[in-house]
Image (cartoon, rainbow, N blue to C red; front, top):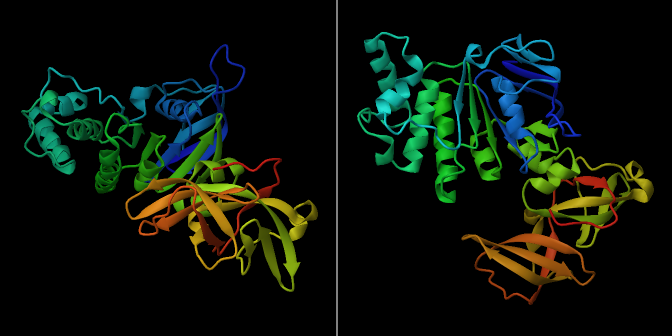
Length: 360
């Protein structure tokens, strides 16, 4: 692994709980890893520890198989060959774009500096902008300059801390795709922090979900969504609810009996013996629930959110159980109306039963 974090623990004085607890992950050369989670989950602390900006209490961090952080080793940040991009861009307003980008390569001869500045500005789509100033650029362009400046010294690892959080929502996802292309074109290995799932899915080869200092899962986006390792990951990623279910053996197959009907022909379904009496909670994603007026299962529309091509309906069954459904936007029903629904799932994700199922 290019970057390897092993059983990492980071503590702050006066706080009873470690900010990062027993975190292990690996990032291959050329891959982009993303850390996502709610505020205060430890993702930025972990990023700062990799940068050498936070001391390590336990475990270790290795770059290219060299230990750079542990309880007894701390390689200074400037010796780690790391490029950093922050959410506030941190551009020097009195310097031109070219001089901003050249900030970390002053050791090079002037001609080599100019060539490298031109090269990285072309990489981020801002060729020929050396003489402009930050205030003349849009927010997205300023973020590209910050990225070019971080790439200019040819770092072995790029760290990006919520770099799009100051931009409007529409721009964020588009810029995330563009930055992914830039990092891939540069052959960069990167670790990226965000709280925005769309950003994470757009930019990451592998994504880590953190909560209360712990890394719950480190996987690709598809696996996080369809095969969440913990209830927290299932709750945090995507839209869905936990519904009470009973697993029943029927011949060679396992059937999940749920409030929206039986789920059959399930792949990777646990056996009923996995839970006491086969009783568990099943994750029902919004895309597992289909609007079908012919279905005997009826649900009342409690809330609807227009998403352009579809609505996200929040529905309540007669039993009081809530479910979510993605419904094509031409199925425009009023709040309070009852509609038919059925479950359509090819695999089931289950967790131990909790007293009250909540909405994800």
